[in-house]
Length: 391
Image (cartoon, rainbow, N blue to C red; front, side, top):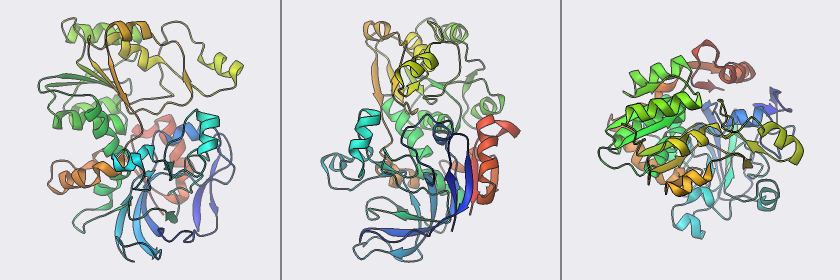
């Protein structure tokens, strides 16, 4: 089959690779009909995520048709159309019992590699390094899906791929981000980053009762989409002083009730104490994430406000004004998305017409063009916000 394969930093290619096979009785094989590039995939492309190996198949946002079924699978049959959550969960450990699926104890066979390289172990994730299980991803013609009775959800015929695909990650991620923001009726919510996750966080903040949503970015097409589709107010700069002063002006000096970091490790901006992240990374030989967004949030959020972090961070984050966060009594909620928890309720919202997730798609391409798609997406060329590929 054809698949997008990692060959090193900034080097991904579409190669011919062996078809996946049933390895465990709980597996299914899915023939991929649609797959997407996620912003967190760029951390792999840029070499930020440790334990990637040449030959790894990328991609964690995908859906398609079940074509093979393991002996123990009861939920699906051949021909079923499914969307697959990016987190892989066993369904019966203590964390899965508490619906904390991204913290599953059993789905990551490389827990010790994760602890050695990331300082922790979470669930397995498709196409996202050997620290997160070494599972082949879904930017391919076929993919093996373990723990099939726990993960995927069947897609009704009434919904298109483009309406359903983002249940795999970014719609639940944006929704959980808003849920973690502890939004109360009448609250003002500020969201850093108007990429796809930020766009869904905007939509979700309204669903959860926000009175005002303020979106922060410096990419015009993203901001335009946040205004047009998300009905958000916007701040069209990422400069530290500019963002802080504008938020104070917009909230009468109080600050937003909740702040959402939908950017993560590779944010751009001016740091508070000098740009030392790259030097620290070089000296310590450890993954380092940029602090700019978190600095702005800690200084801008109101006293006793809530900070929600869906953006992916890797390794350490330097130069945080933690004293300000502590003395302001900020509350922090963060983590990889417990996707399985949200599949049914968010599917219901799509079916009811409350949201059409396809609004973020700007580019539709073939899998053969995946390297070009990554380049366009990374460089934000051609007003690119979200790429969907069809094998």
